Every structure is written in C-alpha cells, then in structure tokens.
Image (cartoon, rainbow, N blue to C red; front, top):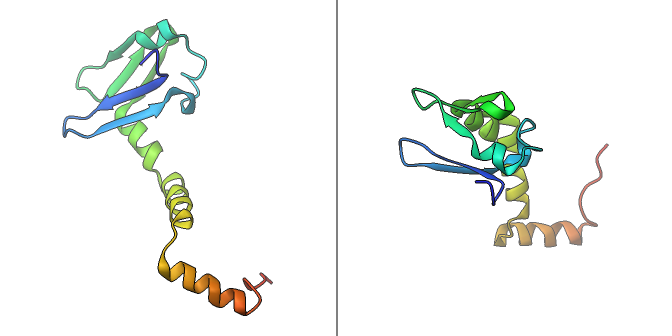
Length: 104
C-alpha cells in the first residue's frame, strides 16, 4: 500500500476493493509510514491507523463507493461515454433535425 497510495481490501467473499487513499480525507496527507501502520479490527469489519487516530468501517467504505449519488453518477458517466449503434443512429436523426432539442 505505501508505494502505490492505494488501499486494497479483500473481503471474506473473495471480492477485492482498491481505492486511492486520496479519496479518504483522513488518509490523503498521510506518510507512507503512517499508511503502513494499518490494523484490522477484531471481527474484520474495521480498519484502524493508530498514528493517524483514524478508524473506518469496511461497510462504510463500500457504502461510500457505491452510495446512490456516487454510483448513479458513475453509471451515467460510463453510459454516456459508450458508443452503440442505437446511439449513433439517434445522433444522426437528431442532427438532421437541427441537433439536440433546447431545454426550456
């Protein structure tokens, strides 16, 4: 973790998460030595950094990554970037009509 500046979590069901520490405000400015001092809490549902006096729950990490607004925003961004035959045809039809309709 210290060299890549990513927090990697492997869940008991085999799924893995990797996220940049920069998206967790309390870890953003931590030194590599501070980040390396991670401790898994009993039960495995929390992570603690003694040097930073910071604890975060694993369910909290998952919820923040896949929370409704963040998740929906990411889906919209990815969906808007995808090019399909149907989208290309719709763009051509809209172009023949003068482009996208203006919002009122």
